[in-house]
Length: 179
Image 1: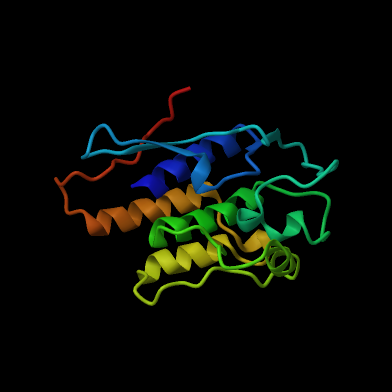
Image 2 (image 1 turned 90 degrees about the horizontal axis):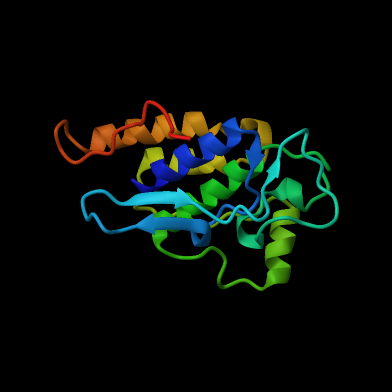
């Protein structure tokens, strides 16, 4: 499950106090060589920073459609790893729909929606209820209400366990990340 690989990768980065700041589908590297086990890695750490009560200065970090509201609306110059969790919620939507968010909106409308903290992509009615709930928790308006990547990985693992009966080609939750 691509989403689980991303969650594990982000859990690792956050464990090292690294905030990515530009998590989006374009920055996910997927190896499709094994049709039974696709492997996804988080790439493009060009905007990432080591978190020390991360102070945002000298411009905005990230790509608009995936950007957490607190990065644009001036609510705080201090941000946390929760900006990556918000972006992951948008990535979950991309994985669900196979589309990029807000392609029908002008950048001005996207900026306005982000600043006002009201812009979220439409969720298809066919969306699994657990996926929907996790996605909505990730893009919660309040950063403190967003789950950690450990919580996200655990929830995704729980979902995968329900989908794949024992013995089928289910991705196993790693016990330790190789350094």
